[in-house]
Length: 128
Image 1 (tube, rainbow, N blue to C red):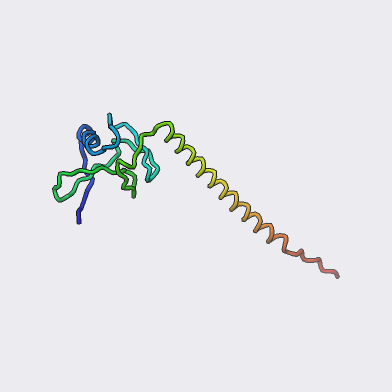
Image 2: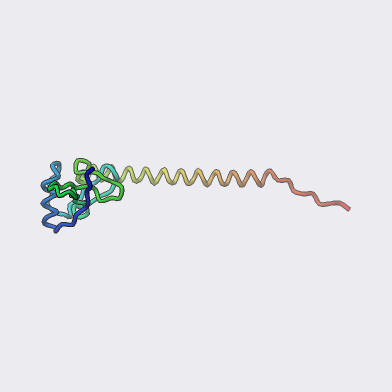
């Protein structure tokens, strides 16, 4: 079993690792952003984790810095206009679905409380 751990590098070293390991996109600086297709987060080169094998293996890997996301460079894309539009559309759809869900719950709650009050009969005043 291979054990890996995140390592700290200087900015220059990290940029060099990104340039060497990421075969899909060119990195000009650590401030460049990528959109992670796995977790949906926008990440920067500075945030990306560099991982080394603890057995002294010279190979380095990089992965998404988002907790529980192990995405690699082939799963990151530059935030082009098309990507940003898609992100905005997905976020808008998620907000809309949350609103619909909240409205549905509110309606169910209202209908439940309305049926409880209309099913009650008023007690008639006692005569005499």
